[in-house]
Length: 140
Image (tube, rainbow, N blue to C red; front, side, top):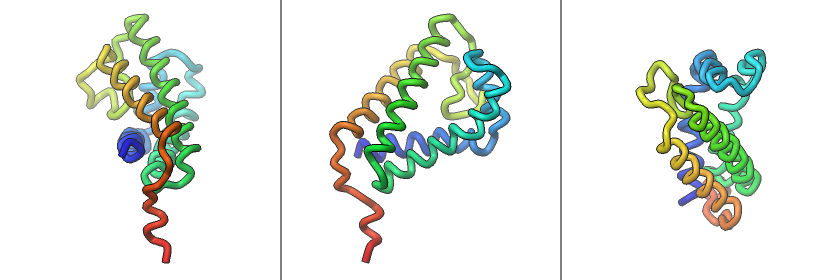
């Protein structure tokens, strides 16, 4: 069940970013952590990484590798959110929607949410046995 939750969250998070990479690149630039020239590259690649790792978790394909990837991404996301909160950035996190659609700003909710998802992803990495596999259900 944990694997499905993490998988669906990562797929859900990737959708708006894939549909509007320019807006997502703007959200990345708002943090000021990477040179603006690299924000486009990150905006074009990160959402696809989220989509594929989320889909692999749901389908039961390379679950350990996918859980490792989602765990590492969550640690990075958590670090970025904590940094933004600590220095008082008044920006949208860019996690699940574009900054023009969002009404919320980075706060403790975002930190605790990311901690919860990181722990859930780490749980999948350590304890998931990969017993439920949608892929194996379609083998004849």
